[in-house]
Image (tube, rainbow, N blue to C red):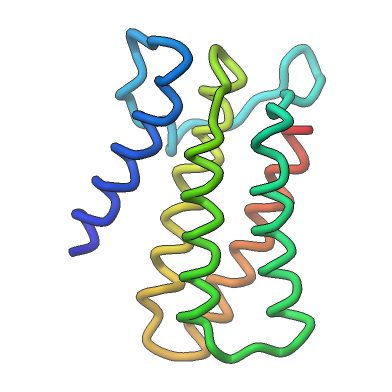
Length: 141
């Protein structure tokens, strides 16, 4: 089931991002590659994608501030925000490829949160999701 979920999400991501441009090398997995800056500067994220990222981060931060305990619902909400992010993707080129290096592990963290067996496991994943958003802000604007 886990592999099926990742396959569907990956297909959706690649399909949505390919709507505006064809990438001859688009099917490779960048998740193990380090994100780099462009000449020491952050990559630009297209404006139509930013609200989905901001909203996902707000969902996570609100959960943490409220000392939430329903991590399954949190995972579902974050997954929905990622689906909207993927649908809004119009990025192309290097910035698009660099964003994938962040997005693939981020998607996996949300899946891990959904699959967490207890609150302790969930809190560890939530901490990783916070780090993921920090990484996003370190490399993208």
